[in-house]
Image 1 (cartoon, rainbow, N blue to C red):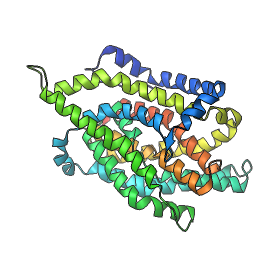
Image 2 (image 1 turned 30 degrees about the horizontal axis):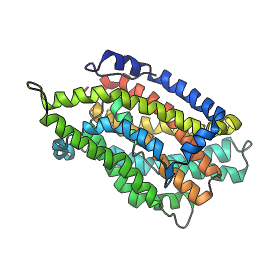
Image 3 (image 1 turned 90 degrees about the vertical axis):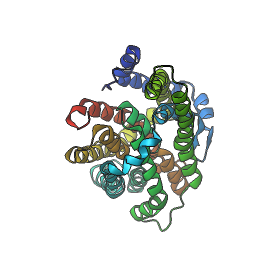
Image 4 (image 1 turned 45 degrees about the vertical axis):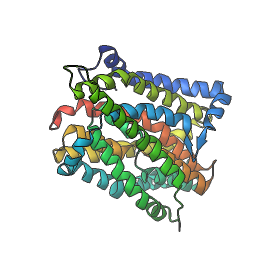
Length: 357
């Protein structure tokens, strides 16, 4: 599981990214080990949150997202409407396919295939957690996955923003329909804080940085070259942020993983199948529709990853902090990074099959 790197990037960074999956595996092991050895430290870090958004993780994600935001070219926004295919696929997969396939997989595994292993009451909780994850498309980490596939930064921003707008209106009724609950209270603080931290603030910082770089480009150097040079220089911090996030996420749940490994594995099965299945649907549709790779890859990755802060917050408010639903949303967080990196690697290896590569 490796990731391709632009030829213009320094060789050291290319080598580091080439073995990114190895570093992630080491960070997973480190997180689980540290979470077990020094649980008090991770308890303190876990409590540094507001509206179910961990502020330490938020800072790390900001570090990951910022380099891509510098690459957003607002002048090219006018042409997004001329390339609607990626937006169409994103909307259809995220809102007409993903929530329903996730619910179906939950029922299949926890009420049929795993029926002899899990009590019916617990099965209902796990299915609920899966539904919450399936109805919440990614807001933050998709910028990282897009960056690793050298996706179109401006188009990715529009795709994420469109999903966020739809989520405001569709999340609650969709979850209510699939869970059979009469009313779902959307945790607006979580939703708005996440969008602000992961999209608005880094985007504003990226705009200011880009304008400064363009206006202060060295003599004989274009503004675009100055931006590329800057983002190449800060990219190691983005990768470091990703690895630190992995350590934290697995550290927060290290003891749970060690205490209940079989249950964690059972919950992970439908999540993994869903992730690869949704990616195949979106990526395949983009291939058949001849969508350029720098749009197709982020388009498929958006549908695959989840807005886990929102899912966790709703699970806790509906079912409680120690519920099976809350545990399932946390497992979704743990599964996401390794699975998404494998999909990033696959996308980079198949880049040549798409136009515009």
